[in-house]
Amino acid sequence: MAQYHRKYLRNVFVETNRLVLFRNILEEKLVKKVRHLIFLASREDLNNEEIESYYYAIYSGLIENARQKELNGDLWKNHLLWLIATSENPFTRTCERLGEDKIDENLYTAAIHDIKILKDFFDFNFQSIFELVDDNNIKSLPGSFNFVSSKSKWNTHYIEKFSLLKKAFVEDLSPEELVDNLSKFYKSVGCGKMGLYTAFRWLNGRGLVGITDPDSVTFDDLIGYERQKETLIENTEAFVNGKAANNILLYGVRGTGKSSSIKALLNKYSTRGLRLVEVPKSELAGLPEILQYIRQRAQKFIIFIDDLSFESYETEYKHLKALMEGGIQAKPDNVLIYATSNRKHLVQEKWSDRNEMEDEIHISDSVEEKLSLADRFGIIITYTSPDQEEYLKVVEGLAEKYNINMPSHQLREKALQWERWYNARSGRTARQFINHLLGTEA
Image 1 (cartoon, rainbow, N blue to C red):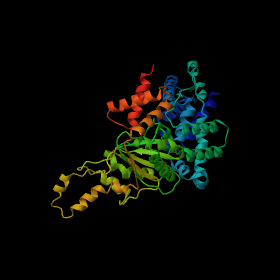
Image 2 (cartoon, rainbow, N blue to C red; image 1 turned 120 degrees about the vertical axis):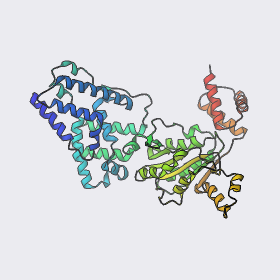
Image 3 (cartoon, rainbow, N blue to C red; image 1 turned 60 degrees about the vertical axis):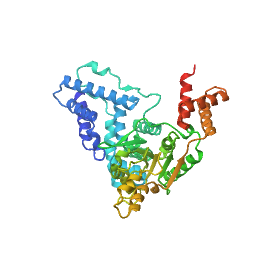
Image 4 (cartoon, rainbow, N blue to C red; image 1 turned 135 degrees about the vertical axis):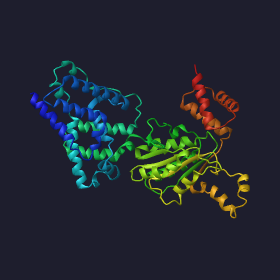
C-alpha cells in the first residue's frame, strides 16, 4: 500500500511539472509548498517531522487564503481553482476576447493537456500522504471552512460564475468539457484582475491596482439632474454596445453629484464588461502605459479623472490632450475619458500670464493652447447649483428612501435651516442633512 501511495505522489509531482499554458501557477507560494510536500512524501527515506511541518504550514496558508478571499468549502480545491480562474495566459486572454468558438485548434489542444493535469492536481487528496506518515494527529484537521461574509468584497457577478465553475470541476467531467466551461467563464467575466475587479486605481510603480470595495452608489441614489444623467447614460450605453461615443467632461459646482454619477455607471454596466480606472491628475504621464495594458482587453474602460484642473504653471494637461486628440498613440476604441471639474476652462489663465507673454509674437496661440483642453471633450455636461425647490425635492426623495418619518413642513424647514448653517445648497448638503437625521433619530 505504501508503494502505491508513493507511486501516486510521484506521478502528481511529475505531471504538474509538464504544465504549459498554466505554468505560472507553479510559482505561487502555496502550490510550491504543496509540490515540495508531495516530493518529500514520495521518497523512500521519509522524514515525518519535516513532512508534518510542511503540511501544517500549508494548512495555515490555505486557511488564511480562504479568509482573505472569503471562500467557503474545500481549502485546497478553492485555492487551486482560484489560481486557474485568475490566470492570465494566451488561452485565457483569447477566451476573454473571442470566446470558445474562435480558439485556435492548437491552443485548444494545449489547454486540454493542462486542464487534465490540473484536474488531477485539483482532486489531490492529502490522505495519500497521511497514509505514509506514522502520526494519527495529522488526520484530524478539517479540510473545509466557511468565510463568506454577508457582503463579499468581490463583485457578485464574478462569485456567481466562479461557483458554477467550481461545480463543473467537482463533477466527473472530461478535460474537454472542463475547457469548454473555462472558456465560457473567461468570456463572461474576463481573466486575471479584469475578472476579479470592476474598478482600478493607477499608481506609479504598481500599475493598475484593483479596488475591492468600489462605491456602491446607483442612479436611484442620485435624485435630480435627470437630463444630465440621461446624457451620461446614453453615451455610456452606446460605448458598452461597441458604438461610437464621446469623452465627457462633467462640469459644475461642488457637491452636485458629478463623481457619484460616474461611479453609478460602473454599478449599472459592470456585468456588461465596463471597468473604471481612476487616474490622479499627478499620474497623467502614465496614460500611455495604461493604454498599452488595456488596449487588447475585451472590457470597455472609462478612465476617470476626478476634480480635473490645472494651475497656470502645471503642464500635465498636455499628456491628456495628446491622448484625446493629436498624439502619435491613438486612443483605443475600448477607452473613454470621463472627467469632473469645478472649472470649465480646465487650465487656469491669469492676466499676469499675458504680461509674461508680451515678448511672444503669437500670444493668442499660447492662450488658445491652454483653453483647448476642454474642447477635446465631445460632451460637456453642466451641473448647476439647485434652486431651493430642487434642493428640497432631493431632501424629500432621500427621506423617503431612508424611511424618515417626519412631517413634510418640518422636514423642509429643518433642511433649509441646515443649508443656511452650512452655506451651501447641493445634493451633497442634502445627503449630509439626511445623515444627520438618521444619526440623531431616537
